[in-house]
Length: 190
Image (tube, rainbow, N blue to C red):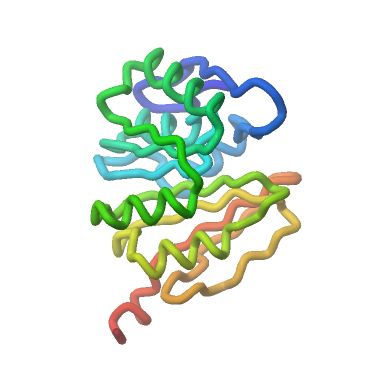
């Protein structure tokens, strides 16, 4: 597992030991960032279910200013911190051990709004719709922001969740990527 592009291209990242996390493959990561970027000029990201921190670190390498990493597993938090340190990114990151829904509530209390939110929950415990509803209800994504959902390719997410609208859905073997953004038409009606 490595950083695919940007300032840290080629940097090797440690994976979380065991089978509790499933890192995004380099090929899928490259396709994903080509869809949403591929490069950024600043902005705030949230890597929920961060695992080894690969998606958030990739986003920082490609120009995001700051990323908040959240995972509930202690081993994952340790690996995220090690990967951030080896990449020299500690100053651009916040790392929290927390459950995803609780983390979103804590973030909402801080009045943070993100440019990019990465959701990559364990496939067996698919919670994406519930989390997307929280993000939408709490307005945690900015008007030009994107929410990136990684899921099993046989999962079909709703076209709309509140004022979030699905903008793209791609399949890479057993992996599916679905993108959401605020629907400008619905947002104006409130």
